[in-house]
Image 1 (cartoon, helix red, strand yellow):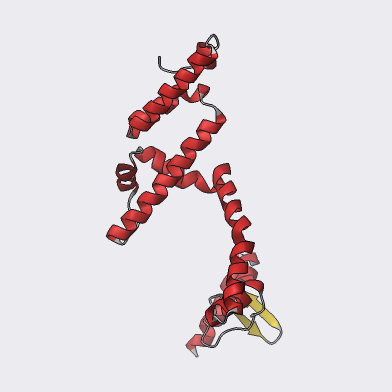
Image 2 (cartoon, rainbow, N blue to C red):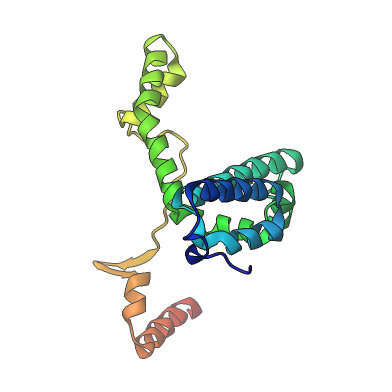
Length: 196
């Protein structure tokens, strides 16, 4: 069959459904690349939501592992086709996962798990600081916002460009609101000053 639908299995009893799930799982574990994608597309309508979540988690895990391994080996971000070869997933699956993972509910849940652990980590840093670890103390104070002063030698990366003449400020935002004629007048004035 090209696609298996819920109507195709509606007459299955529990044992037959379990057997289908078992065989499908075995096939998913054995297939790679586009064959795996084609099989998932074939059974997509009968896959339970929990299985879809497991497939996504598996893809996320193996892609992350592959990227870490390949960066360690080659010292640069690997191309998608290399990640696909390393993971056994298709290039399309890798590309789709890398493009859409940030908005996937499973990823958002994973991020929440890390946030959940932050008080425990903060408590560990605090414990180290209380035991005399100066670096941990500094990190702790930074994390809780007790150190807000700017460090010497800190480079400020924010840049605000504008020209101020007496109390008049000419900024990029102001220039965007001017007409072409007004911009030409300003340019003429500045060109005239530079010529003198």
